[in-house]
Length: 214
Image (cartoon, rainbow, N blue to C red):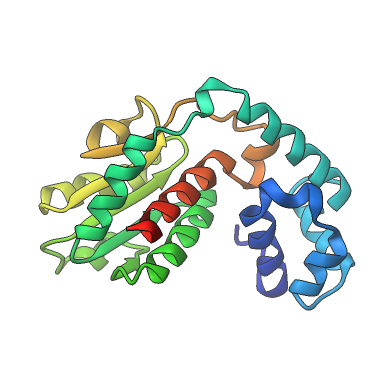
């Protein structure tokens, strides 16, 4: 994540946010939107582990088709609705994640802003010292990241509502009041494991649509 700054970060976030549409989007289109060149687009793709944008687009398309047909990637709409309702009713929402999941957190933050829901993306547990009410939503692919687990436990002790997006059966899943389950653990050495978490982003996308529909 820290590899990308400035224009490269904008390109990276565009690639992640439009993963399901890349088969219809050219490198030139992405370059124009980021006010840069196709060379920059290909450079970002290489940092993500691909030889070029063409390879990234091809492999993402194949992976998405595989995910659509995989029962483990099914999104529980009831859980989505319950989480959305909780966020809307909360006086303030805190968001926390680590590593690659920060992309999903930033994506959700945009939806919360559009829905006019007061929220704060936090980076340290000390930012919750004065928090006495509200909801904390944590995003973790594995649900086993120590910093995320500690944040969930501390927040729960403070009386905050704790929500999660994590692997089914994980430690985080067990701590949370409500968790939208990533039913299949994503292989850490897979194409997606390098830089992105497509299933998490798909969940956030569905959650965002619910938030904007209330």
